[in-house]
Amino acid sequence: DDDDDDDEPKSSALTTKSRSSRAPATSESIATLLTQALLSNDDAQLEVALHVPDVRIINASLKALKGHPYKQEEEKNKQHSQQQSRAEFEYHQKGEILAALLAKLVTRLARAPSRAQNLGGWLRGTLVALKEHNEQSSGSGSGMKKGGGGGNEIDLASKLAPLKNLLNDRVESFPHLLRLEGRLSLLGNRG
Image (cartoon, rainbow, N blue to C red; front, top):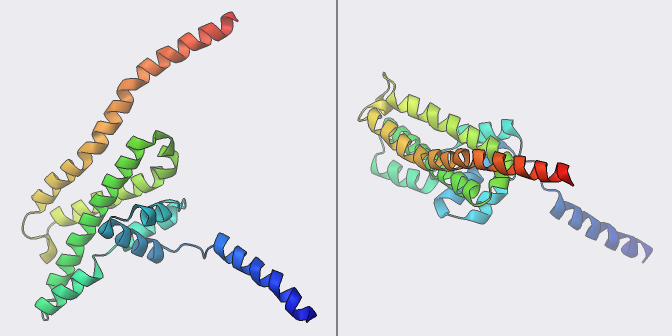
């Protein structure tokens, strides 16, 4: 009987502890979470992934991104003998996922500029991953790079346009904020 009473608080404490402290995030788990969240447009799942602050995990997760497994299965069924086609498909999917992540990050920054510090690592990592992806698609020598690497560069420019606009808006408001800060400090010094 005494053992049963002692076990009850311990089990609830373990349950509470396991709910509040999750297993540490790995790049593979975050990559899977990102892929699922972006392909299903699940903002709650995306927020879970975006709460990872470790830049090493962020960068490794972005490198580990792959295409959607179900679509890869369809592609495998259509083209059994063409290994390269699967690789091209997966490569194309990764580009789409990175572009979708960039769009989601820009939307979040536009809505809540105070999140810039938290999302900065994700934004930087996504931009680097997109740049590397774009360089690979416009490079020479690989079968995956045939058929319009230049088109990917143009697409990248269009994907970066919302970020450019957001940054331009912030930069344009900066002198006005500096003037306001100066006026406020003058008023504060008078009193």
